[in-house]
Amino acid sequence: MKLATALSKSILWRGFYFLSVMLLNVLVARHFQSDGSGQIYYIINLLAFTLIIISLCLEAPMGYYLSQQKMNETQLAAISVAWTILIMLPGWFIIRSLEVPKEGILQLAGFHFSATAFLTGNLLITFFVALFYAKMDFVLPNLLLVAVNLLLIILVPNNEWVQGFMSSENYVQLYFLGFFMQGFSLMIAFLFRYFKFSDLKRIPAELIKPFLSFALIAVVTNAMTFLMYRIDYWFVNKYCDDADLGNYIQACKLAQLFFVVPSILAAVVFPMTASGRREEMNEKMQLLSRGLILSYCIACGGLVALGYWLFPFVFGETFDNMYVPFVLLVPAILSYSVIHLLAAYYSGKKVLSVNFKGNLIALVIIVVGDMLVIPRFGITGAAIVSSIGYISYMSFILLMHRKEYKSRFADFLFFRKKDGQLFYKLLMEKISSRKTDVS
Image (cartoon, rainbow, N blue to C red; front, top):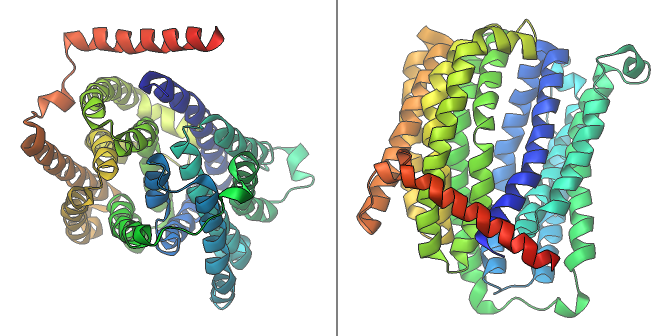
């Protein structure tokens, strides 16, 4: 598949998915308000970190080896299902043994049920989305994800009709069950489309060690990345009240919406780099980075101008303290847009040490900074520290790229006049490929 075609399909269909996520987030925030939604997303934050550990980040080597055709779809699908069962059978008993408070969101969510549904569903989502994307198949997985999100959007109990049969307590459990519904549907769809019993062969012995090594390195890197942009939630939860926690998490979630397009592009950059098209991806990655920076400066400028009134209007009156943290997170938004593309590029080259070192630098800055700043300055201080950490990571990874390719920071950060012509060329390439497909 040509790069322009892959990018356009990925942006379109993943864009639909993230649009549904954003709408669902707004409705949940408005219904449960800043303190309730903050607790829900804080629980999800804890479970998401657990997911990184128990998944062993197998999706990273899966996508890599499928892109290089060293392992087939059937082998990797079997590994995905087997690993999910292997982990969640004992995981269920561990979750059942955990004590939860008798009051609050943890009790409201039916924590044991919700945690099991979340972890099982997201294991399947993580594995099978990676396999679909390695096949450059962006339509079907996102249709399935969006379908479940639309159901959850319709059933938010914010009107009399829904409240007639759906209480807030039941909805919280349905919300977590939705992750399982998504994962299960993705598994069935992938098995139906790609699984062949004739391809169910033993994995070559020489691939097992590098496969597991790739996964273990990815676990460390992904865990550090996760902590880099979410560990401040723990400090805010410790030193601030539930309302501030909800406002800060919502500001971060809004900032993370800007990571959607880089993540979509990274989902294309990674398999194409892994398949050997490194020089092509290196040149076009710089172009995409410059385009993102320009677009995001304009978008963030608009939100900075209107956000003070817009955020409480959209999310509800209880989110009146999220404006300042969002403004202070704008440098983090711009920095991580560059980081995401370069991290996918180095992952595709299996040069994971660069991502690891960059994560470590940012994480140390954020942890030390949060410990010193949040107790005194609250969520404002948390936002400042996060932006400093992201800028440091971006600077490091750009320096590493400069050593290898003699590139400049400006190659990734500043839009050029000729970039418009290059984007036009990509558009014409897409139109040409569509005409070829029709004929």
